[in-house]
Image (cartoon, rainbow, N blue to C red; front, side, top):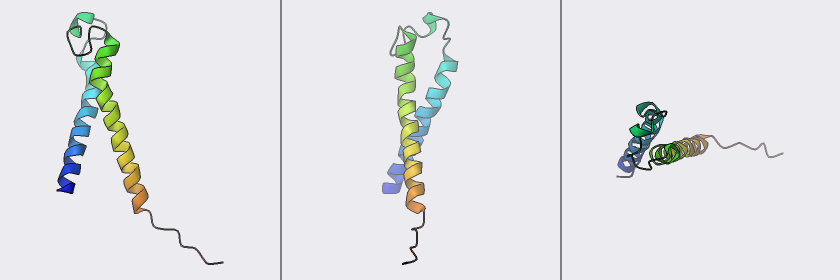
Length: 82
């Protein structure tokens, strides 16, 4: 069950990251009418915060998870006893 929840968490996080990367290309940032009615609108900063913010947080979560996983797999340093 724990592995299933981790896999689902990674899938959701990757979705948010992909959505954050795609959002600036999906909307026309030079035309306010393309994003005025979106969540966070009518300002561009609000739209990008609402649509890209979760992706940034998810990327930080994934990075932290990978770093923690790599650190837990490092072998312990063996002291020579001198």
